[in-house]
Image 1 (spheres, one colour):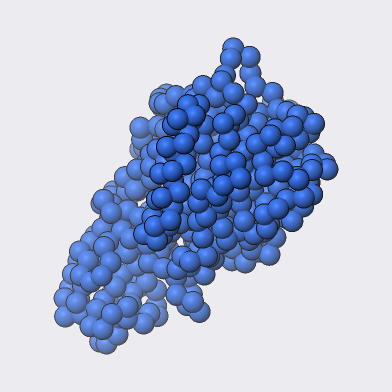
Image 2: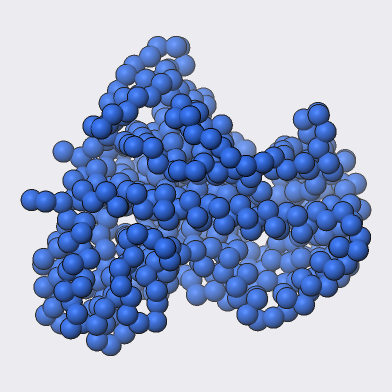
Length: 490
């Protein structure tokens, strides 16, 4: 019998988690204490690697229709261009950043979930949890205060930076709050001198100013306010935003309408373990960081996708290997830590106060961003196609050009890895030995072989599109040994 999973939180991370589990045949329930779907835009950037992974469920195609495609990231200082990072040179079916309000992303995810017979239950609070070796007991509280107790095999906490689950588990959220206030807003505007296919960051002596285009006349605008005080920051109104844009921006831009505004302080925090027994943390429940680079939502959604195929194998009884679920923390926590480091560096670079250091920053950035190798590396980091798991406990031997744990770029016209209704590995290869492996491991391998990636080579790719292992065809037994690790005893 397949174990049921409770997902706490109906934001993009929770919805992604539920969709991945449900399409892999795992019964799932999604709850959220808020009264209904959010109507604020919050996160706006979806990067190519996230789109590649969402393509497995059909979500990417709907999102791509709804959002604005951005192919260049610009950095300016005054009237001088410090750097121009092209995103469309990466090897991906989605060589662009997709800009769309978060509520649209959530709407597409809910639509696909509903098609599978699942709808989030809002106004439902997770009042208490208890776990034992066999599962998780959850006390759920409805809007009228009525409580019910239900049993689940697993719980995934996608309930945000103030996670109730994290608090209940007593997990420390270690890190700092940066001493700088920020404000952001979505505005309709005119006079933007930069195409809507390009985002723009302005380094100014007073502070940073960023423009993320969601449409030709609609932008997310983020700007720093100055050092924090004992008073919580409040968002600027449109007139005050206009004055900041006039001082720090390129000139000629006129705000015409306010859609939404907020103010915030940047937290850089992470738990020291993404797993506690039968409970997992994903997204902001596990890590928070600067919005510089727009990586937050994407990192959380990729947490969910990483965990889902592993949890599906275990909850369906296909695998009992402890390393499978242990690998979630081993793989994703280093990624979260790296995002915190890199986004923190971007924030510090954009908010230097010393004019001398600003001049040095501008000179060095202009020099480095002019180098092709640096361009390629930075584009890979921003678009997240460079993410990999080189130290994963799931990595097998790799014989060939790629290292186990590396992303395997999707091939144009080929079914995405992990797109089937079960979490199966893909095997690239030909011949009798490859066919024998498929027949020997029907629960773990796709029924159809994929074209060899190199002559005389067997290449095994995980359901989330990362290289599990590779070996010469004559060493097919190494593939069998690898897969045998994950097959549940008969």
